[in-house]
Image (cartoon, rainbow, N blue to C red; front, side):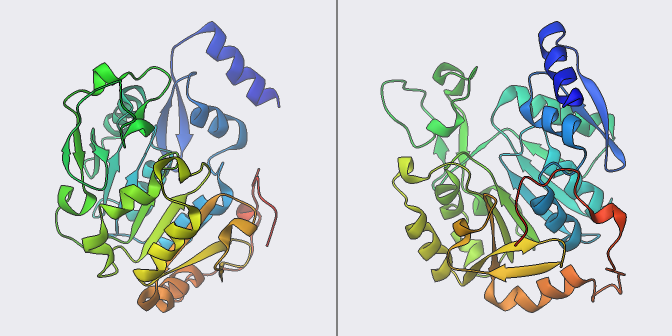
Length: 290
């Protein structure tokens, strides 16, 4: 509580950033950032279940995509796991958050974390900033971001925006726009690339004309099975109704990749000791155990 109050006081008194230690690197945190506040308050795993999955699953040399990267909490965590030979592609249209991520990237001299100032959608096009219509990219309208500043912005399909390569994971967090963003990656997803999707479903996708049931049916049609992660057991709990579990992030795994993912989570592929330790306990999980 004291750390939270301190960060709130910083927001009132100063706009100067603070560089927090973060998974062997430094994360540039501005007082205006709610993500920075959660990290300052709860530590380096504020989303304990989701970030634990990332830590248990990703390996050196992996490639991953972070759509809706914000200030880079997930992007930098992923970069710490894939090392110098891996690759992280981070997409963020919000200028203030993106510049914060760029500052962290430069400060840590990361040459394989690529920040893309592009919006992700179901089709590739150039956005026309017409404030008189409810555009499919209304999700990029944040508190200080106006349609006039979006005019001319590139909207890209994921499977056209990046080089053809094998990705280990795709994380999407777009305030309910996740289903339409994934429709722009169907060429890859039909081949099971990437084999693992992390989808933040905290807000409703119905405002974009896609119900949760419809979205889950689309994932099933692409041979992805939905699950939630139990970090205390390093176990996947497959379920057709992930919303019944605490937490708002669902994990979707391509059917053919399930054995590989399970082996990674258990450390079988690298002979990792997965015995419980004090370090594995959350500071704040925000979720009830399965």
